[in-house]
Structure formats: structure tokens, C-alpha cells
Image (cartoon, rainbow, N blue to C red; front, side, top):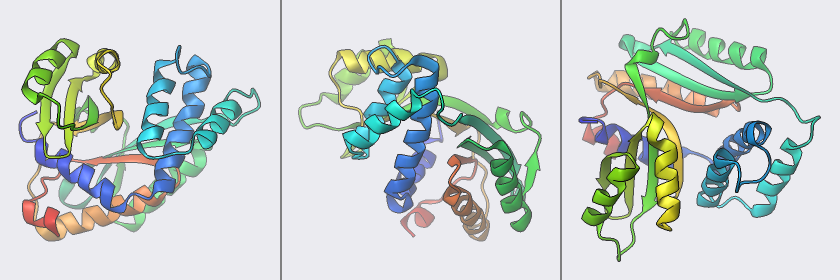
Length: 246
């Protein structure tokens, strides 16, 4: 994970700065539909749904809103949601990996193609860029004054912890994809509050580009994130500290 810390902090800072709460809620509610269809409406017996309930709590979603979504998803006539991914090249060969949840495949594909065409990007064949990213479990844990961070880090290694980032407010935990469930269980057993738990695509190598390219790529990412079906956009740019401050 060497070299990824800066990227992850940029992603979290950017999310805190410009992600609209309604977009966060929409993404979670779409994922709830899939989780309920796959594992049923009971969070106690459906680990994926349990995580979404936890994430909903972390972004202050009202319980009634979440429960209505669970009830609706359990209705056999509810809309079928699909998980879609897109792999693109944009300015200076920067790779984008786009994740989406949609009830209309044709609409989502058309929207992503249109955004790429209007902004000089290229939609590549699925699988052609996936190797540039590694899927990791990422857990954001509020840091409490009573926490012994070093001791906790040693204990969490048994749950698959690969790396821990520490700042004044949060601990960010990284696991391999296959250890995601193990970490979920360990944190639950220890009664550790988790603000969010998700699978992210971490770039294996960060590419250095000039500031103007960063601006152009971030503008495209912003347009993609505004689409109602797009849930996550990952890139492989290295973001300098001065750009982060800006």
C-alpha cells in the first residue's frame, strides 16, 4: 500500500467537501435493493445489508427512510437493480474505473459514453484497465481518546489488517478483498464504531501529471459523479499536497 496514503486522503477530503448528502443516500438505498434481493431483509442474517445499515447511520440517514427502502426492496415487484462497471482513459492516459448501480442498463451506458465523448475520453473494453487497481476493504473508524492505537493495530492484524492510517479524527483500515468480512466481524466483536465500511479500488501505481491535467480529469470525475447512477469513480493520478489544499 506504499504511496496510496495521499490518494486515500484526497478521496476522503474530496468526498467530505463536495459529495451531496442526497447522493450518498441514493447510493446506499440502491445498494440496499441488491442486498435485500441477495440475502433477505434481516440485517442480522444478511452481512451486506448490515454494513449498509451501518453506513446509512454514518451519513445520518433517518431510520424510517432506510426501513422503507428495505421493505420496498423485499417486494417482488420492486425494480431490478444492476451493478455496472466502466473502464476509461482520459487526459494524458489517466485511467478511470467507474462503478454504477442502475435499473436501466441502456440509460447508464449511454450517459457514460456521452460524458466520455464530450470530454475527450475513451470508453475501453471491460477488463482492459481493471489490473491497474486492487480491490481493498476500507474502514473509516472515528478515533476515540481512550483508544490505544498501537495495541488496536496489533489486534486487528488477526482480522486481516494490512495497513492503518492515523490522523487526529479517524483511523482508516485497509484489508485485502478476501479479508473484508473477517474485519467486519472483528470490529463488531470489539464493539468498535465504524463510520463507513466499503470495498474500494486502490490504484497499484500513481501517475504524475501536471496541474492542468489534474484539473481537467477532476472536472470529468465531477461530471460523472453527478450522474444519478454512478456510485464511485476511481483514478490513478498522484495529487500533490498543494493541489489538495486548493
